[in-house]
Amino acid sequence: MAGRTSPSDSAPRDRARRTGYLAALLLAGVATSAGCGSFAAGAGLGDSLPTREAAAQAVLDALWTRDPERLLRLALTEGEFRTTVWPRLPASRPEMGMPLEYLWSDTAAKSRAGLAEVLQAHGRQRLRLDRIEFGGPAVDYGVFRIHPKTALLVRDQAGRRSRIRVFGSMIEADGRWKVYSFVVD
Image 1 (cartoon, rainbow, N blue to C red):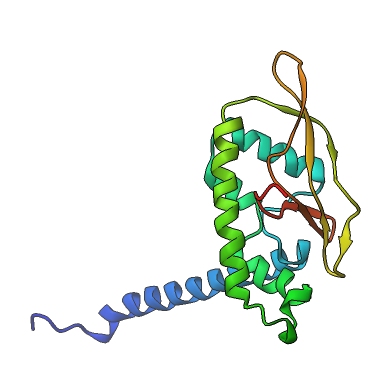
Image 2 (tube, rainbow, N blue to C red):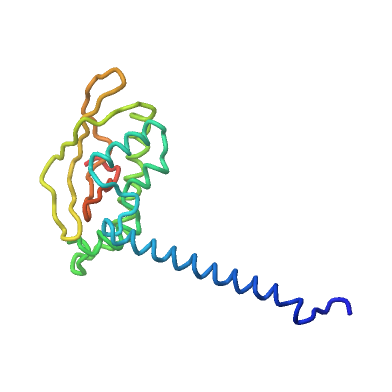
C-alpha cells in the first residue's frame, strides 16, 4: 500500500529524530554552561580582557579598522549594566527615584554619539599604546571598580607620541577590563 510504512521502515526515522533531539539538548546544555562560565568571569562582563592595556589596545585596533561593532562589544552592554552595575549604584536606590531605563538609555545615546566622534577623529589611525592614565582614584563598588577619566598615551606609526581621550571610564571586575562607555568624562 502506497503511503503506509511498516514499523521497520519508521525505526530509522524515529532514531534519527531522537538523535537530533538529544543533540539539540546537548548543545543547549553546552551553551548554557558556557554562558554561566562567562558570567562568573568578570562578573558578567563579556568581551572583557585580562588587562587594562589589552582592553585599551583592542579599542585602538578597532578604531584603526573602523569597526564600530567591535568597539560596542568592548564597552559595557545593557545586560551587563542591568545585572552587574545598576544594582550597586547609589542611583538604583528606590529613594533616588532614578529609573534604570532612563539612565541606561541616556548613557547609551551619549556613548553612541561619543563613539561617532571618536571614529571621526581617530578612525584609520594606527596607534600603539604606551601607557594608560586615570584622572582620579578608582571607585570600588564591591563586585567591580570604575577607573575614571581614562587617557591613553600612544605612538603613531612615525613614532610620534600623543595623549588622547577616546572613552571615559574603564570598568574592572574579577581582574577583567572593559570600557564603561564612549562618553569622554
